[in-house]
Length: 310
Image 1 (tube, rainbow, N blue to C red):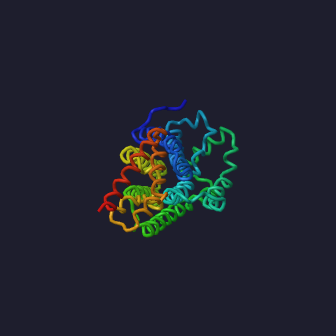
Image 2 (tube, rainbow, N blue to C red):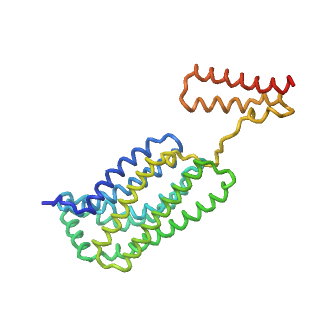
Image 3 (cartoon, rainbow, N blue to C red):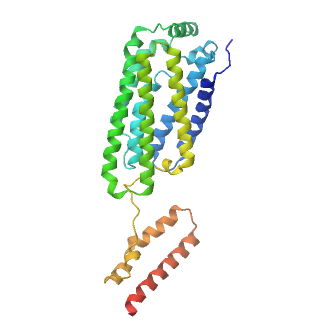
């Protein structure tokens, strides 16, 4: 019979998994930048699966439901590509996921192929294999590919930082406040993911105790999920995916008071259209928009009449 007693690390993992489910729903609910929100949802979902699986093993539920064994094995191979692709999509709303980007998940496919025989084992065989893992007896085919997940994680962390630095240089002349917040969030996420990979790699090399190694990494991922939830509440704009590629334009009416081409500026349709579009996005009704256009037109006439009268 499985023991459902949790120590404080596994309790933190369980709460982190529940919060991960909530964050996944929040990411999916966002309307802007479909590509970024889906990648973020996939990233948080992978964290959730990893945390839930740690509780699954720690409570002995594997002996009751053995067919879930190995459900989180591929998650570390997924973390790196998802963080990188999310950083790209969240910083550039014109970016779209294409078939060629599936190459980022080729290592994931390879790990699935290598581990496939274990997924088709009977329940009793899976429990026996789990006991082998606990005793430190890892099957040779898994022992060969396991180190490459650390290489993948570190490589993608470096690639994410390189991309974000290049992106910051590209848009530094047109920073808006939202773009600054968004980039700060992406740098923070990349740094947190890199920190976890450095921790996992270090203790994999220096520590022989697999349970301790797994618990430390589990705790680090749980803390990352907590921090993501906290930052999402404190700065909800980080999930709106607004960037400096789409700077706010200043209507021409702001500068026509002393312009020699006053009458030409009045007929400048894009400025009026910008104001109308802004109210359309805010959810105002048709009556409010008409009133806005009337007030907007009156203010322009008043502004123009002054220079003409003088």
